[in-house]
Image (cartoon, rainbow, N blue to C red; front, side):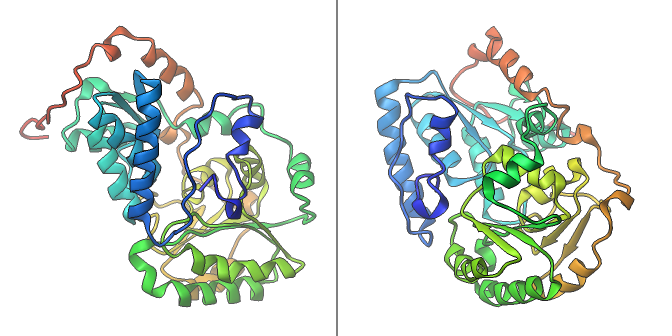
Length: 342
C-alpha cells in the first residue's frame, strides 16, 4: 500500500527519515485479491532475503505484509520477531496476527494480557518480552510537531475538527455500501469539520474511496490519502474526536483524552468500558453519536496509561536484542502446553 500513488507514495517517508539502502517490492493494486497480494509479497521478500541473508526478521502487527515476512523467515530458518502479538480485534486481521505469532520465535508484546494469550497459543514464555507499544514511545515523547505545524503542512484551516478513519471489514463486505451511504449522510448532517484519511487497501476499500472522494468538494472536509504518523498523532491529540474503526480510536486516542466513536465490529474486544469510547453497531447510529459528543475537558477517563506501556518500549527492545539468551534460542519451535489449572 505504501508503494501506491493512490495512497500517497508513503514509502518516500523512509527516505525522508534518512535511510538510503532500502528494498522496495512491487505494488499490487488489486485490493480485492488479498491472497494474491500475500503471494506476491512473499515472492518479492524471499528474493530479498536470499540476497541479504539477515539474522532476524522483525515484523509488526496484523497485516498481510507481516504474515509474508513471518512465512519467509520461518521457511528459511531465520529468526522471526513479532511486535504486538497476542492482541485481539474483530476481523481477518486477528487471524493474521495469531498466525504471525505461531510462525515467530520471539515476541515483543504490549502488555500482560497479550503475553497470556501467547501462552495460550503454546508459545515459550522465555521468549515473550513485555515491552509496551512502540507507538506510545512517540506519543509520550517530546518530538511531536506542533498543531500549527501539522495544520500548515496539510493546509487545514479548521479551528475545531473530527478525524474520520474508516477501513473495510472483510467479513462484513455485503453491508459496506449501505453503511458508507449512511456514514456520509451522517457526516454531512452533523455540520462538523472533518479531516478524512483514506482506508487501507483491503477488500472493500474501493467502496469506501468511491464515497469519500466526493467530500473533497465540500468546504468542511479535508481528504488525504495518508498523513505522516507524527503529524497524525498531533492532529489526534487536538481533535474534537476520531470516528470510524481504526485502532487509533481505541488505543492512541484514549491516551490523549480524545473521544472516539467506534463503528461496527473491526475493533471488537480491543477496548474495555471507557467513557472516551462510544461504540455503535452501524452507521445508522452515527449522527446521534456525533451530536452527543461532549466537551473532552469534561470527560473523566479510566484508561490506564500502563496498559500499552510507559514510552520506553524501544529501550526494552534494544536490551532484548543485545542479550545472549535471545540469540541462543533454537530455530525449531515446540508447543508449550499450559499447566493444569491455569
